[in-house]
Length: 268
View 1: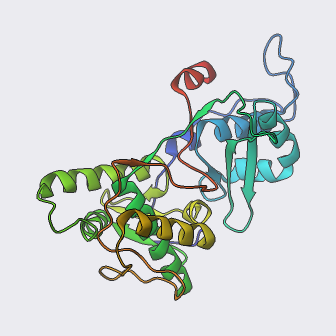
View 2 (view 1 turned 180 degrees about the vertical axis):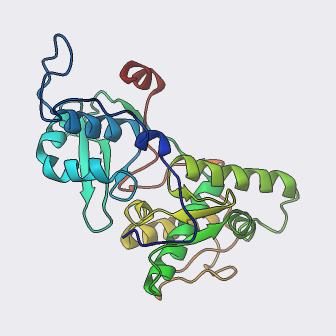
């Protein structure tokens, strides 16, 4: 899943550079008064699951191996705080999500939903289609350019929109937001990004179709495909999408959930 590539991508270096403690990685007691029941490697993996929106075999190979070896145990620890664990072995990504009570009641939560902006929503759809198209053509590594992404978002602006500089700023901010969410992974070139395979989990074909229908309903236009975006035969894209300023995508398997700031401070 991670063949040699010209652009050396460097996302998530902070996680990779975290110091590893000396000693027996399989010892349960790691500090005075420690009553934890996880090994050092299992704890590191659990912390990464809590701190990051997802972990992957490409970005965190050691923790990914630990996750596969201890999936049930780590899932149990997340369940204890009303979180569930989703592991996609095909795309080699794993993420947490809020557990849903059977009766529909809401559990206490460590997570908060971050709504996608209009520009982020458009970018997610475009990135999903670009990733799918390139993979279908045999390219394991899919690279996109910052300027091209911003220009593609502009295709979705209505003709009567006059604040082009403001639109460009919002599109550029959307790119940075998806970099922060690690949907786009940094490379050695600051203006080029690798599309993470997590996009397939964020927007599987079924959910993508639902989202496109939802966008079309919001826009009220006949769907069409702008620019050089290639879509599957059974999926079409609405033209001139005009979404509200902030949208929460309907019923996606994962949103840009993150631990609240107070929880992060407590865990650091």
